[in-house]
Image (cartoon, rainbow, N blue to C red; front, side, top):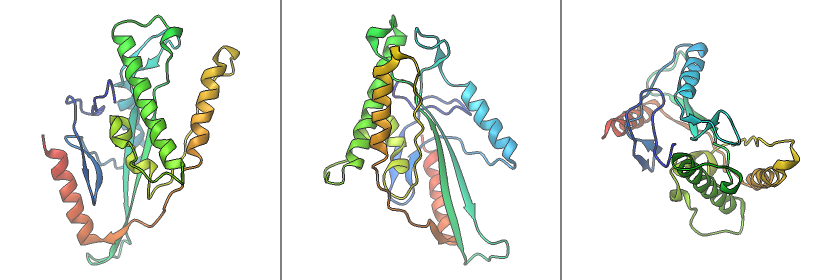
Length: 221
């Protein structure tokens, strides 16, 4: 996610629209699908995509990532001896690397760098608002997923049937005290999100139908 635009890091093809399906969930139209045969192939895809991320040096980081990256792995499992009428277990793993927040008054960023930093901070603020709403058990209002492309992408990974682990990156430097404090508060709020876990199990026939629908949605322009 770069400047509020969703891009495919494996096969670049411009800004991709986000859609939602009540059965499938979040769909990125035009996103490429790949079927690695080994763990090494999977890792190669991860490394290849990471190299294609937008990076520019800033005052705070010589190799600053100017985007958020999401790497999704879909896993299906069924018995080898199973016939077409049996059930299939499904899971989706999302690895997410968020760009670091920036304070404009702590940098000399101008032009594109300033705009990138503003979009990063805006999306992180939107994510914080979603986390606040989900973590508040008394909150009964609308969850603001649509405030950012990032929060729309992470909808399936935050609320509902999922297990989420957040790793907060902080600095030991006293100069970064305020940023470190805010990051830890950010992570602490996430701890209070309660998930409603259930097994993702469906018949093979229904799974095939949903998969075909998912592929058709991806192929839409």
